[in-house]
Length: 54
Image 1 (cartoon, rainbow, N blue to C red):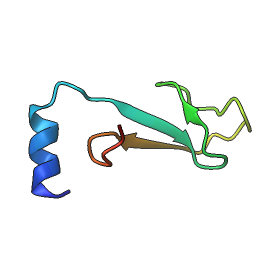
Image 2: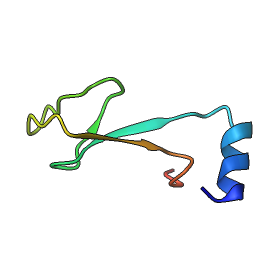
Image 3: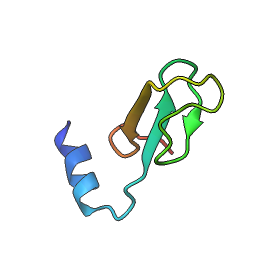
Image 4: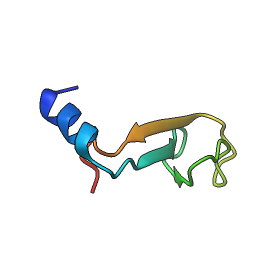
């Protein structure tokens, strides 16, 4: 992780985590581990600050 992202993450109070189905790309609600669209249990977890997701 680049130093700028690490510092921004440390000082930020916005800790949004994005959960996304690896099979179909549907964005899931936090804590969902089964995709409601395709039924897959393959879920990726991303930190929005690390990937600059608005």
